[in-house]
Length: 290
Image (cartoon, rainbow, N blue to C red; front, side):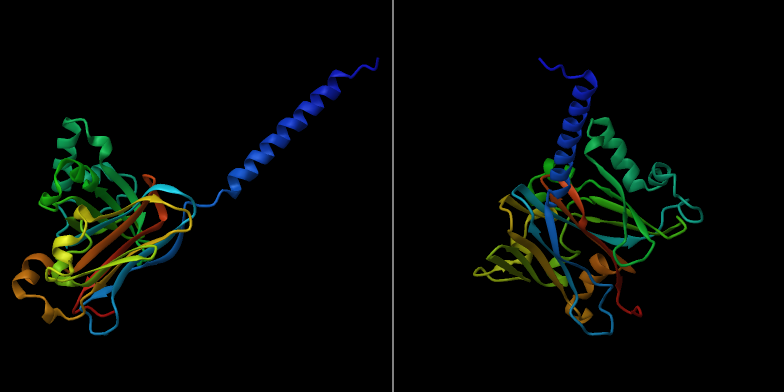
């Protein structure tokens, strides 16, 4: 009876393990991404002199079956930089920076005291329409939506951000809410939500026969879809008003008057942030050259 050497057996085992590893690796690498981006865009300005359509739009195609797909919108208004923030680089001092922002610091302290600190999203993200700029973004939105009922949508600030230039210096500070856009019933001409062939359009101050931006849009700025099938197309489009005259003066002064807005839309597939399908736009308020 022929005898097989141990070296031969060892070589065969090594080849089998390597082959299995290559096969598994190939399968992993060939796994399609959960989402294909179809549209991701936002404007650079609002109420500027150049009259062209101004839209915020996100649309994706599901690359596989998903239990849940969410677009989370946040709209923030520029406010004064907190004391001590300007004049130094913050590249490696994120927590120190946030502690100088009272709205952030107070909320972090409270939620830490009740054991919910890990539910607060803190991340650094690129600015979609400003090269080499980034944001330190702090979002309590999902935590607030879990605590409060829909009718208390946006009764408290939920989201904060510091805009950093290429050198790591803070150049702007933003505070805002979990909502599709600031003062949406006044600043949006149209909101459209698409799920495959199902398209719903929301209009400002619609009568009882139509869907109203003020009354019928999902609360806390989150548009969610469930049991998403591979190949399905889902999206949200916001058409912004172009004329300042369409906004009542009292609304403008209390809810719109700011040098710039920060519009955020983050996409989550089965609870995971899809970075490539998320956008962050600094939108200049009118009277600003494009």
